[in-house]
Image (cartoon, rainbow, N blue to C red):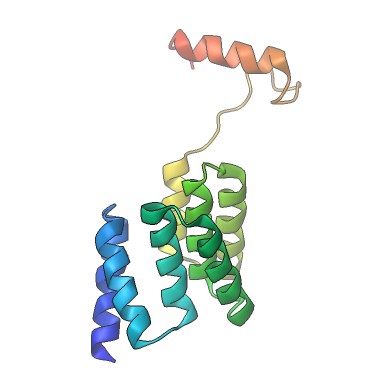
Length: 145
């Protein structure tokens, strides 16, 4: 059991440092010792990032969420998988769901990495309005934003 905790912690540290290949090895070994939902979601993120097995990753996350719907770690890893797909809106949605369940520093770090959007140049128009969109691009290129 002690080996399992060490493998999980080593894998989590590897993910935080950006070394998902090492994390993948750790979580593969951890899954052999115990197939828990938490280990499987970390493993799911690693296989999505390193092997591109997105379908399998989503299946593992959905299964873990069915078993433990109140664990924010599952939402953290689901959000990370969405980021592998470059789907920021869904990733943010998953991170926020996880934060609504409990305070999680890793989720907060992921949200900070994504950054905060600036107000649109013309606030009374929608963000998707072409005037706002292109004015924002021009202002950014000029360094005024």
